[in-house]
Image 1 (cartoon, rainbow, N blue to C red):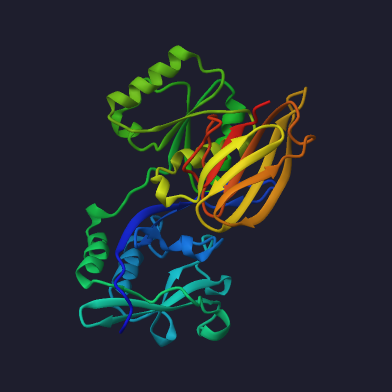
Image 2 (image 1 turned 45 degrees about the vertical axis):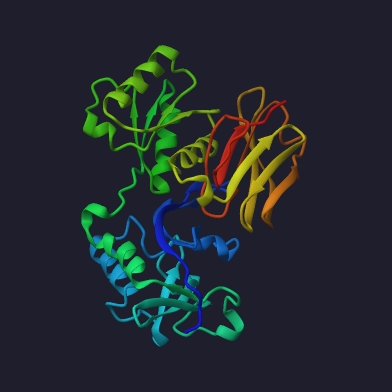
Length: 354
């Protein structure tokens, strides 16, 4: 085998859920991505919306079986020695399409080659092969160490996919909690964090504070989490618009380093959004605004695959007049924040600067 050696590793990744502009929902999935030569393998597949078989919500027995299969300690799930590398984030049906590869042993090394898009039991490499991707040859010791560690229950990543919602508008919080649960994120509503045990606080990945929460109450919440030793993301709700708040929360739950993100720059003003992405991916831009009666309005402004680099996306003046916000969503994940320079995310939600 003549393939040059590549490094192999695993890193937490997420496919962000969301409440979409058309009323549909996108399920939140946490998984481990394959890091090849320091870069997520998924990013080499353009705008593919998919997750690896190593998802956090997979039952332990199935998760272990997936790991052992990648270690070639179990029979391949598909004919021809092929293994699923990435599959549909909404279901496990091969009919939705999956990226598969041939995984083989060469002496002490592991080789991934012949990547293809597959929708049934047989892959057509000529028609659906990912030409130019791989082969990748991994040192056996490094490969086994990365995957073998997952067979130890204590080494398996447990993501905190639960958020604490604090605010005065109970009806809004109830709608937000329902939307989050629909996409696979747990949510609890509370007046404050007083009296909540440290063990309970450690279950949360983010705390959301409504605009009516005063500075004294905010400080008390931060202090409660600090005493519990929890590094929790704090989200200041931008506006009482559920899809916008969901995008903010999804972004806050994404704690990956910048080098493992697609969206690394966003500045939004009335005239345009300046967006920077690290890999070719689908980018959707949605504007939300409140009218004079505080009624929310939604406008889809852009939906296309962008190449790596900086992009100037014009914003329709009618869609962003008054109190307006923009959500930029790339393939896979989302981030929210009110900083006009929200960076290092795959989704960003910010207020549009006048």
